[in-house]
Length: 454
Image (tube, rainbow, N blue to C red):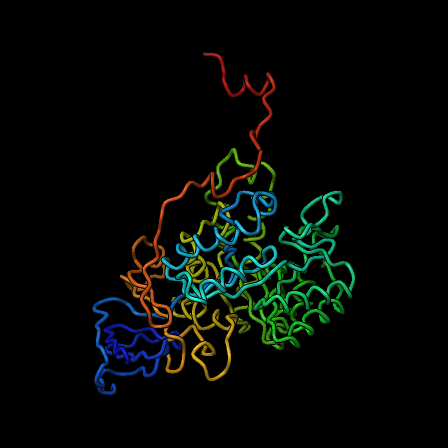
């Protein structure tokens, strides 16, 4: 039995056009026919018909940078030390509802401990819970000078940390193979971090030979590869190795653009995390007092200039929010990245919407060819997964509509309308397990400054 859905306004995600008076035929979880209503196939016995009314119909959105199991954490210690992997997975199922309600029918989870996101993915895929489609990963493969080699040497990197320190080529390849066997959809490499040379350039954590070996092995095993890379050296390494996605690329230059284009690699800036921190952090928070925010301000200023050059060169862009931290809570700011592409990087609304749908969906896994699970997502087109949303408003005129509470009025995954349960929760029982008690040092001088005499 098929559903014939009539749409006054339809954006397919394949071009910049808003199509009017269209019909979409959905059967077996897939789009079977898409086109003008006047040319639509006649409903057969047992088929049903529905009308989207005045709603804007578009593909389900894709966030390629959602840390689904981080729990809106305030620190790396909270992520890695605060709770068990089992609790992280259960918590991820809970927060997946908020991501789905925001109109995101697919998410990429770039790095977590063990099999957390794999477990969430499998539970949703098995029909035990409703939720978005998930591209799952495991530990971020790190080296000295990598972002995910967070902690002091006397702590190391236990298995329950999100990073996995791999200092030799053998260890690196073994980790890629371990993750592939565990069932990841892709592997994330942390190619640089916060370590800088005297001239301010980022130090890559791996050699080109190491990166190429890991990427080559992952691709041989049928897995995609994403990388954290701020600096030029790491971006070049990623592109020359043929990675599928580069996160950030803030200090990429024209040489990087050429290499990314030659490799067919995409970029996901993930500027939402930085913008939120710059705009929302309070004066007393360590984010400001530590200098972290000042560093992000510089990155935004330089990064936007460089990213506009990548865009002009034709490098494909994907959208990610870095959801999962206290500054980017689940379900709240995912669509802000779409607006950033428009406001900061010169995208048209249609280009930004396609980046958040058809382009970002390239990182989503596909199952066996010839089965519904093997169909692509990200666009409203015959043969694709029937993932789509209704929006109250016109994102082609103002992508900011997608951030307005209640603007996404219906979410469909595989042709089935889902109604996420947005239960309230106690954030202090869900995350924030740190033992930190104070953000200041209360000397007599400091107290006097805080409490001046009348």
